Length: 168
Ligand code: S3P
Image (tube, rainbow, N blue to C red; front, top):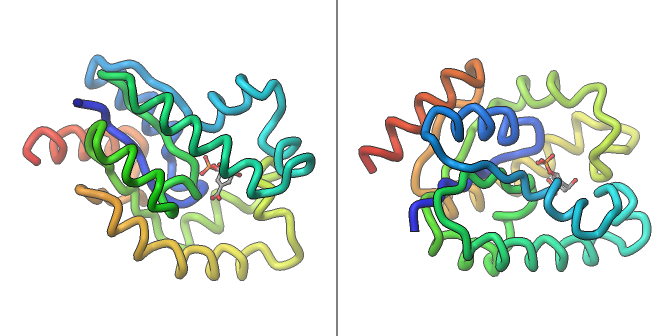
């Protein structure tokens, strides 16, 4: 299957790049968080509040199973999706997993005013980003077949993805 699955930390640009990439590559686009929100008729924050992170992770896994049946899709995963082996297993069979690798500084800057990500609504946001990023980066790298530099414009990131996936 020929899907492109975008992986990386919150704020690395999965959604923005994904939309651009889907136009560029003439593919369809789906954002996993939006897909989950639509099915649950709740926002991600509401899901975390009502069912906890574990409840959200179960919905996320279900979304991976459902979306893995599609073809010709650019799939923007959530920042925690590919940290879980069960999701990597499902999504890696359905296409190429691409890591958008943005620096700690870029991420802190892009996430500084965020109100929608439950994991970042805490006292010291930058510390939390550092802690999660250190823990997750090795897992993102293990899950992905291709890595691109996420510190550039979305347009450039999308172009880099397309050329790397095509020559992969
Ligand atoms: C999460 C990232 C979010 C969303 C949820 C949990 C994470 O997606 O799935 O808030 O664990 O990193 P984005 O990466 O699209 O912000």
